Image (cartoon, rainbow, N blue to C red; front, top):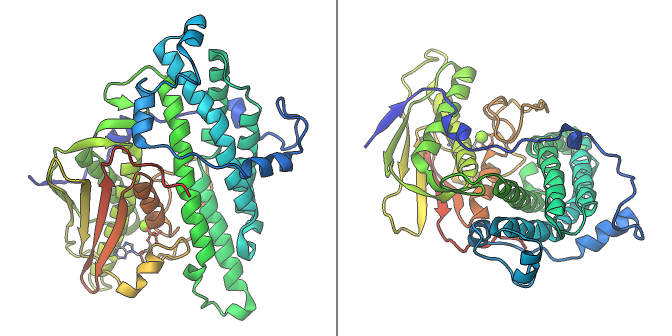
Length: 430
Ligand code: ADP
Ligand code: MG
């Protein structure tokens, strides 16, 4: 079966609930110095240091799903007798158990990120945008410590309100960090001794930090999103944010509609996308993650195709299709999606830079840090931030999958997106 299309629409994402702040007051910036209801004896920096020394607990997709569907209720944390005394339903017990886990786990994770952001090498921590992101992490850390231990449903409600504010506060982390990296790149390039040819993608510590940072960010948003979703009335086919019948075809279709829209806006033309293979395949996944990865891969393929084929004398040539194949086989270990383009590829020796946060061959590298430019926005530029690929790979790796690119220099590129079906894959936290 083969499908070709070029309609712009937002069906796939719009059918998946997005989490919006309910209380705008939660979004106002809270001064960092404020009394804490729970811990009054330690200073704020001592608290951060204390939580930073604790170990983070990784969870598996299976635990997320099973806890969400009420299968994994810990007798130790909420014994049946206590649940009976409080007249809790199974759903309420589930909510309180997850809330209690988050009340303990999130301050640990947020304290790690906040302190790491303050200690980055090469002066990266001094970039105004990175400082801004660090302050969000600190605010969120204290917001959670301000919440009481979870003993009642009211406590669970209170932490939900705080989490909703946190989820929104950090919505623009990607673009803000990208802005920080642009500031860093400019600072390095302006450096006299550099002469503009220092290979920025070779800042290994910065890359290692960013890989970890974004992986952790995905984890925190996954845990918060899962908790907020589970409190809502159940949706058919969903356990929290995980859709048990995510359609690969729908995700590709929606991502390519949006990528074509952006490509046409930039170049006046865009290649068609052909989808083959298991267009009927559905599997358990987080639809917004799948969409994001495909969107980034397809934008790259489209840009490469247009740039490789158009010439001064023929600015609007016939463009070869981008071809997407969804792997066969119900019992395959992975779901594999291959995106092939005839965009000229790149030298194999560029592979490292391709996945660098500081490398782009697009000239446009300004970021407008507007409220519209959230992680999944189509308002931003088609290319130029240089982190589409590394972030997509982090999304794939979070659930045990991977993203790899195989270039055929002079011809085109194959991108392979491996999505793990391993139900018990744990978060890859160090
Ligand atoms: P950006 O698109 O913002 O530059 P990405 O991380 O998405 O950032 O891609 C980094 C770089 O990798 C691109 O600038 C481009 O040079 C190269 N690249 C990615 N995908 C392809 C492709 N399909 N064909 C050719 N080059 C590619
Ligand atoms: Mg890109």
